[in-house]
Amino acid sequence: MAEQHHVQMQNAVEEMVESLERDHIRKMQHRMFSCSAECCDRPSDSMSKVHQCIERCHTPLAKAQGVVTSELNTFQDRLTRCTMHCNDKAKDLFDSGAKEPAVKALMDRCVGSCVDDHINLIPSMTRKLKEQLNSLEQ
Image (tube, rainbow, N blue to C red; front, side):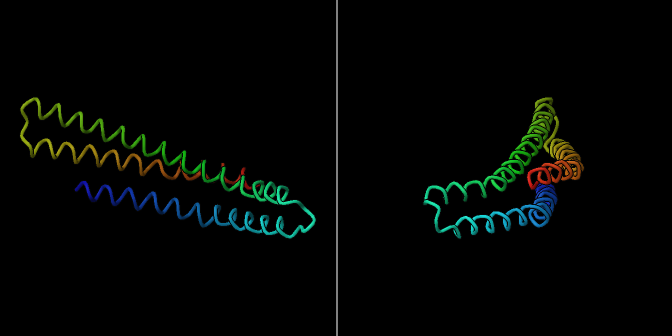
């Protein structure tokens, strides 16, 4: 059952990331490459100026990727803390003399609750990320 929770969470996060990539990141990549190409179309600029121009073109995308990575890391940390709490509860139950099936059932319910709670956070996290990406695109 833990595998089912893992797959469910992975699918939800992948769907969110793919939507962000398709609706925002890809457009930013297009602008970055177009901008970089324009930098290279300036024959009178020095190599240093062209490199500075290209760096400026890359900045918005790098910031966007940093924002998404940071948010996903925070999300992962929260999920990890939740599952660690489940581990603690299971250990406490086991230490109190409960049998393995009861401990496994508790663990499954607890982890399932963590997954459900965190999947429910994805829409608000997506909205927040879209707002941040929109502000970077301008």
